[in-house]
Length: 403
Image (cartoon, rainbow, N blue to C red; front, side):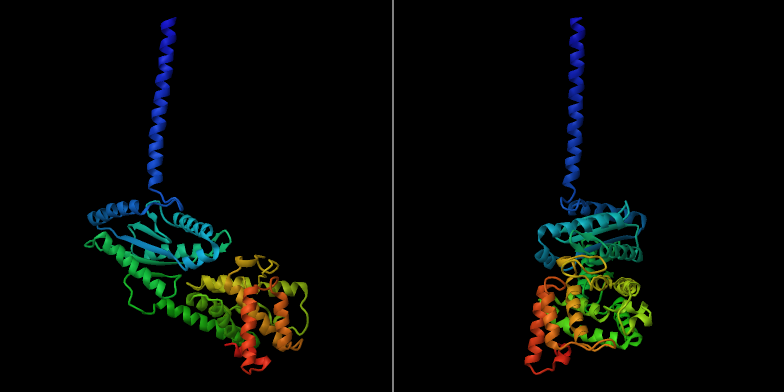
């Protein structure tokens, strides 16, 4: 009996030892896995990406297959981090990592290449296929949200591996393409070698589309079209006054020109009604920001502009529409357009009322600072309008003189 008890204890100890060894082995596997993962995004590390790149390049050479690589960079990341802080910036990086995992295949390898740069390896993928994948990623990020930050803008560059190239050479070509995307204002994909400073067909299409929509708005309702042009003049000055970078200013200018484009879907009887709107009519009128966003999102590369247009009637205190977001959750372009739009609307004569005086309109802006309007935007706008009047401009022309 004593021998039997000892044997059982020895078996138990042996089982415990085996379980411990198995657990240690599992922990080693997990630790190796974590060592190959970026701690912020959970994506592969750059070292793991390079190993996969060498392996896939050898396979592509052996079997004569295509191999694509893309590098992506978050637009204006430093400004975003300065405005929202490191924690919010890490949230943006995590969201980019999530979208990359969702929008790529199991055979692809996505990594964080460092800072706000990412890379994606796409085996058996040609240039059109890689471009389509990157466009999907850009669209998904446009509609994403990371905490208070709504919509993430990235630029991308793509290269196809020539089987005679070393991995570093083709990766360098992808970075050249990425730099081209950045020079053209960001939020776009450049595939293959790009000429220095050359305008792509996509850029020309975007420019033509914006111009065509502006003409459509002017023809549809002359007041609305001319109003948008006047608001554009003020918006540009305010954006510069707030110290925004040139890419952001250009995006906001496009949104200012087209901020009322959704009104093309509003019936004339409502748009030109010489009296107060009913509740149902007002509901239709308020939908124009969402309609405008939908129109602009149909044009590749205008996702950032579309987001500004959607939110141009949000209030600083959260009481606006369509989403009721507040404060710095509202895109800065939307906050600028709201204040400039309100000022110009207040001083303009309409069929159902006379315009306010410049002094009355400024008083309304000041009164609404901190509730309807961003206080910083109002401060810059009022300063610009005051400077215009000091230079001798008439009150009714102050909106144009601000330009």
